[in-house]
Amino acid sequence: MMKIRNNASGLEKKRKATFLVRSASGEVVERKMEVATEHILSVSVNGIPAFRLSCTPGDLAELVLGRLYTERLIRSLTEVEDLFICGKGEIAEVTLSDKAAFSPAEKDIPTCCTGNESFLSGREDAGLRHLPEKEIDPDRIFRLSESFRQDSELHRSTGGTHSCYILNGKGEIKSFEDVGRHNALDKAVGHMLLSGYVPEDCILFTTGRVAADLIVKAIASGIPILVSKAVPTDEAIRFADEYGMKLIVRAWPDSCWEAVSP
Image (cartoon, rainbow, N blue to C red; front, side, top):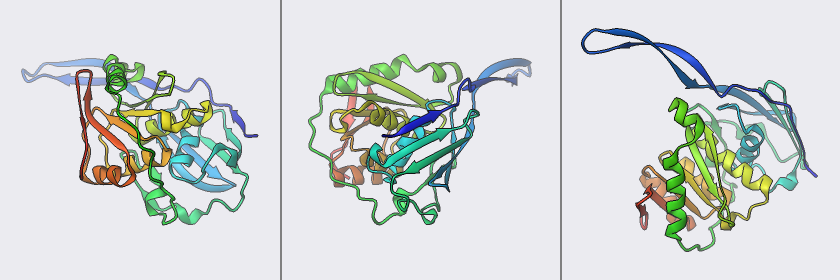
């Protein structure tokens, strides 16, 4: 049975910063504003340095487990024996039941807006599977869009985070925030794993644009529907079509677009 020892607590997700605001008329005014905290978490797997995440310091256990899962370094939580996170939230140590399951040779591909690293796109044995056929329920899509419209706490105060919402089979919605859109998605997936949600019954909603790297992670999660308030790239549409993912973009409380062909 997996043991989680998350000792990180009281980490600041935002801080006050001072700015000089200059107007076109030449007026200069000093203003203070809250900004999102950028935190570095170093993760090792079976004692081997795995990756460093530039992230928002919250939901760190979900972030680590979600990242391992969407990068296909683990296929289920049963492969994780232990997850330790230090009190400062700077070090995470993961022990897998299969001690040969991780190789540092997998650590070489940069990705995303925060300098995080991705393994999946460079692995020939990533094992992405075609997703189960799922019908679109517009009411569920619009519920997620409405949740986004109401905004999340950290974004409301700083304007500097991405959010990812997960809707489970019971219709419950949980939101996660991070300075990186990939991290926010990984936190939502980590929550899905820890909560025992059935992936096929879930929907993900991201506030970020959908490029190939993000949709590949979503496909790896096993969740068959990805929704975004933003737009996709051509490669994202191609991956969605290839693996049977329903990709909904430009999703707002009154309309949404479903990608039907690359």
